[in-house]
Length: 456
Image (cartoon, rainbow, N blue to C red):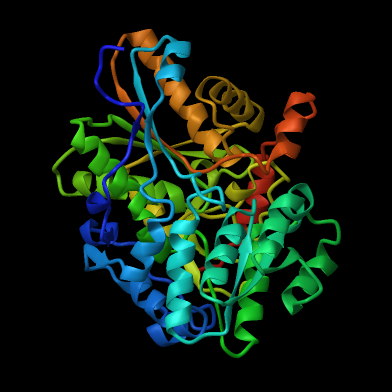
């Protein structure tokens, strides 16, 4: 190995970010505002404060401050598992026989097993500062619910989690980690909320969706004194907290004079993708550098590649604010694919606006091909990746093979958002040849698009 770039690049403690980066400050055209579902007017801070913590509302509405200080207590918590390593995938490069240089930012070095803890601890901190009793939330694959249960345990907050039914059944160990940290976990849709009972009455055999779980969690939060709802993706405040991923990546790459040509992230609601690309996107927006950004989503839930850019409800029960985003329709019920964290019907407003402006690309991939890439990665890099992360791996391998064909020595950076050790049901289905691919038809999507709210 002639190059002097180490396998793993860690930052020193003094190099760790002390501020979050707010990419909206550098966007000339800002994301459209959230709308009140009753009035269809932009949500006020007071209205949002009935659902979210006060400080988080301020962050959600902040489009002007480029940097926002990370409270010292959150910085101290981050030191338990941050900085996360930036890894050069030498073994994968050798296996692929590609001239491409492949790096991945590994976010699985904590008990929650994913990047979700970066925002969970921030949201729990602000809830505690506000004097709340607890919070409610939804979770798809379980990474967010696990991370939030850990964060709430740290701050002695009650945590109520609505877990998408198919994931609740497929991932019992993920559920038990949440319960071990003190969370109450309910499969969604459930009979514990009015909206859950309505959904069950209409779709008694449903596998659930993130939209359903969000509706239940919001209803539960607003019906209990001393509670607020917190969300693990989609919202601008979450992308803000996750910017530590991209900032650490950039600091580490700058330290060794590395400039990525292509930056890749899996895309469900947008938290890890937005966090990874934000500081690099900021440079692109300011005209300082140029990068190619690729969002990778499942073919079974293709909000960017086949959705429409429109105002839509953020939840199936239509109790949350409306957001302008690339969406498949709030009533869209994705198949029970194994990438549970990528089953949301819409995409972050920030990422949707960037995509609409042509500043990033998007591709969709089928889950059998995703698991083939996950297996290939695990066998040479020694990490069993989460199904969500494996979408980014699939795209990174594809881009590296293009470099092999053309002889170009491009540098690729992707986000390895977490580990797949709670996803053995999915790996078992793949290894046994029982895994199938489902792609919604145009007719199915049109039926969902026809239900979108009519907003001028």
